[in-house]
Length: 107
Image (cartoon, rainbow, N blue to C red; front, side):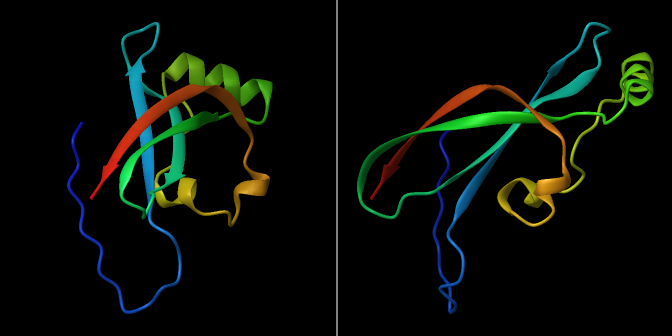
């Protein structure tokens, strides 16, 4: 999908990132998260290709796994900024879920 972005800031803190959330149907036809990922947006002009490792949050116990499967409500992040930040991620249980490749054309 083409995205047109212009950045302006008075504070150089942080680096622009793009957060990707992929959703798809499960066995019962419910939309569930298939993966989250984030990558830094390049600043230099030209064509850039980035591969994003995707991951999904997992339940911590067998009972939670069964309950989420039975109800069709899988674990997911309520705030997509969690994916781009490092804070609090060390206590989150996740599973690798493939890759997404993004191509940037920076002018």
